[in-house]
Length: 113
Image (cartoon, rainbow, N blue to C red; front, side, top):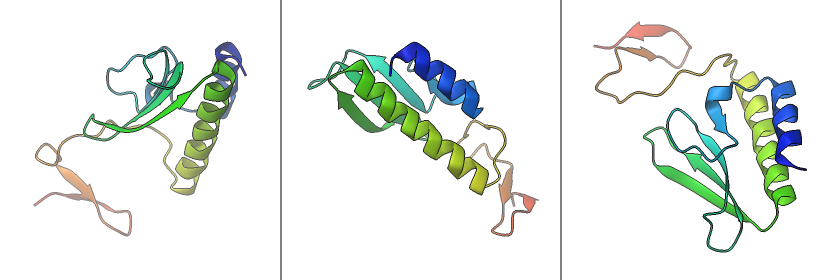
């Protein structure tokens, strides 16, 4: 699969565009990044960014087809996970000090004490 096809397939999934970058852009709020070059062993890299902005996972691929197929699988998994958790929009994470509200285990939003 090529990147232009990957882009169309992800759009049909309805994944929020703020969650991923297909252009290698490493600036927040992107959580999943497809990057051409930059890898040690491979020519294509998938980078996953954690809530605190640090790199959590890096996968390297020799071909665009392999990288795009792997990236698409991550997006399919993300869509399924978000549906199971009933998450419809992306809310950028913030540090614990800035957080004014919390969500308790039953799903209620409560003001932080």
